[in-house]
Image 1: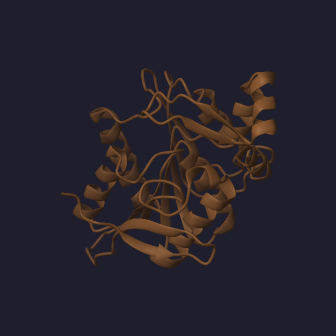
Image 2: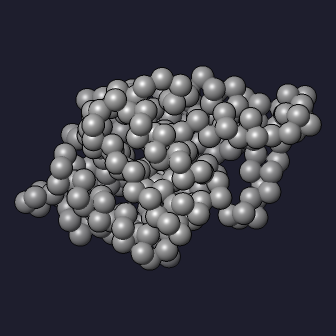
Length: 255
C-alpha cells in the first residue's frame, strides 16, 4: 500500500497533494529536486518515483506533487489553466523547499519549469526537461480543424481521446486563452544556468525539433539538447529512466 500524501492549502485555493523528502545532511548532497508532471498526469508515474528513490539514496531534498485537478489534489481538471498550475508549482517551491532547486519537468511540466524559473530566478539553479512542451496549447490550437476550434469557442471545451489512458483529454477555451498569455517561446529566455532537454525523436506528441528550438531560444550558453533516436513521449523505459537519473546526478554536481 502506497504512503498517503501530505497536503498544503494555497492562498489561491488549491489543496495540493504532495510527497516530500527533506534534505539530509549527507556530505556532497546536491540541490533540491522538484518534479513537475505533465498534462493530466499525476505524481505517481515511474519517472517521479525513480527520482524519489534516487533522492533518498543520495540525500537530496525532493518534492513531487499533483496540480489542481490532477491526481489527489483538489479541484476539477477542466477548471485548470497553465497560469493556475504555475501558481501550484510556485507554492510548492516557496513553501516546501529551501535553497537552490533543480526543476525536472515532463511535457507540460517542462513549460511550467521555464515559467517558474522566470518567476523565481534566485531559487532555480537548473532545469531538466523530459519531452518539454512549452507553448503546446498554441501549437495544438493551430493544429485543430476549424470545426473543432468553433466547437471550443461555442461550447467552451473539446474532448479528445488519449493514447495514455481511458480518460479523454479536456481542452477548454480558457486553457487556450491562458496558454497564449503564458507563452515562453515568443521571446528570448534569459536563463543563465544549466538546462538539459531530453527529447525522443520518435515522440508522436512533441516534435523532436522542439528541444532544439528551446535551447536556441535561451540566451545563456548552458542549454543542451539530448536527442534519443528511438525515444517516445513518455521516455519511461528502464534505459530512459537510467538516463534521466544520470542527467540529474550530473547536473546536481554542476549547480
